[in-house]
Structures are given as structure tokens and as C-alpha cells.
Amino acid sequence: MKIPGLVDLQVNGYKGVDFSSGDLRRDDFILACREMLEAGTTAFLPTMVTSPEAVYEHNLPIIAEAMELAEFRGRLLGVHIEGPFISAKVGTCGAHNAEWIRPPDIGLLDRLIGWADGKVKLLTIAAEPAGAEELARYAVSRGIAVALGHQEAQEEDLERLVRAGAVAITHLGNGVPAMLPRHNNPVWAGLAEDRLFATIITDGNHLPPSILKTIIRAKGPVLCIVISDATSLAGYEPGTYETLGHKVILEKNGRLHDPETGYMCGSSATMLKCMNHLASLDILSADELIAMGFHNPLSLIGLAPNDVKPGQAIFFDTERRVFYAQKRRIKQGLTVREGTDPGAP
Image (tube, rainbow, N blue to C red):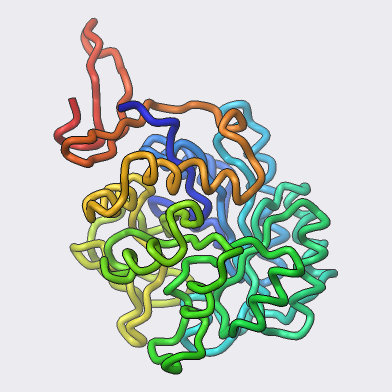
């Protein structure tokens, strides 16, 4: 069956291009976006993680200007800024550099919005710091969806931020310390908050199947959204690399982690791979999968399906439970059908 497409709310980079690098160049950014769109992602939010102000000032205009290109209209849907208003505690901050994390600051957010030419669509902040409510209200007043993540938030913190306009939790089950209190922790609180979408990284490494099932059953497919959290090492071969100032290891199974801390450093997967792993668990109908990979992410950022420009055709094989992208190209006078899945018809 042909599906509307796949929308990814968190792409941090691709094939060697880091959207948060201080050396980001326009041509490299454009090439990485083209490659990501060719890899089966129909539309996405280029994402910047916690960075120094100078890097935001350099990178956000590059991203915003590229979004104006005809080829990216309806494909690059806005900017996701994850941080710098998150928790700086070890484990909670994940792969973000704690030196660059800042307390809630409306003035800084205003500058970020300006550098991005008003194209910020999603902002991830921690719920518990003083000033988080005011920051969320301001972001919402500027048309930005607010998500909560990389935090130690308890139920009362989420309640306050929901009243301030927050609508989601960023990668629920990740961005938390390896050890948590048994009952009062941000994972349980996030599961129980029925007014917040949950974005989840379904690459097969960030969350085991049992946790994915638990999140989906607690929130319901209507409140779950698949994201890739793809980094600059997505699309690379296994090996040892450096990213975000960390030495990282990309394993053969796609797991990308810091060998010193054991914490994940983003994902090496694309949206297509994430959707295929989730489909393989056989816990969701085709319609539920499509909602989590297309309709729900658009709803979170206030867009409709017709705001997305169709790209290459995306299909779901209901018998084999496999998503694949298909395109046509001309080779030696013949029309050849190509699929990203080896078994694609």
C-alpha cells in the first residue's frame, strides 16, 4: 500500500554533516538534506542541539535560507532546537555539552528565533528549572511547539508546563540517567501524562521492544511519534569517530555510543529504518504505524498533510510488514524501479 510519507521531527545531521557544527557550510547542509530525503524521509525538521551562541548565529541562518529553496519547500518543515534550556546533570544532558547549557532565557530564545528567520517549529526544554513556564508560554506565543526532554521532571513539573502550553516529551525513555528513583522519575511521569505526545526513537538500540510496547500501550498510538534522532554519523560504516566533542563508537548493529560513559550519542538510523524496526514488532496496525510516522508529527507542529510536498513514493508491504521507498530513474533507455528495501517489488 502506498502511504502519504514519513515525517521526522529530529534530524541532527546526516552522512558526515553535523547541523550543530561551528563549521557548517551551506553547500554541505544542502547536500545532507538531499541525501536524507533520498533515503526515504519525506519531510523533516533540521535540528540543532545545545551549542554556543556564536554557532547558533552562524548555523540557523544557513538552515533558514536553505528552507526557502524551491526543492525544500514542503520538505524542510521548520527548525527543531533541542536545548540549550535543558538539565546539565550527567546522564540527563545525554550527549549535549553541559558547558553550553543555559537556564531558561527568553532573550536568548528571541535571538534564536531571529537567527532562524522565525522558522523554529519545535523547542525542547527541561520542565523543572525556574523560568521554564515563562519560556514555554513565550515560545507558544511565537507559534512554536514546546516539548520537554533531557530533564528530571516530576509529575508536578509536567503539570505546570502543560498548563504553560507544552505538548510533547522528546524521546521518552532516553535523555535520562542510567539509574532512576523507583517511582518518582521523568519516565513514569511522562507515561502518565495523557496531554503530552511522546516522541520515541525506534532504531532498535535506544529502547528495547518491551519499553516500546509499554510506551505505546500507555500513551496509545494517537499520542506516539516516531523520530530517528539521526546524527552526522547516520549513513556511515561501523567504526570509531568523534562527534559533539565526544569519541564515539558506531557498532555493526547501528548502536552509537560514548565508550567512556556508555550513553547513547544520538542515532545512526534514518526514519525508514526506525519505522521498519517498529513494524517488525507486530504490535501496531498499518494505520497506527502511518499515524505515528506521518500524521502525528504533523499534528504536533501544527501542520496538515497538504503542507508536505510529496517526494519519492513510500510504500508499506502489509504482508511482510516492511516500509520501503521507491523511485524511478532512466537507465539505458529503460525505466528502472528502485527500492531501498532489497525485497521491494
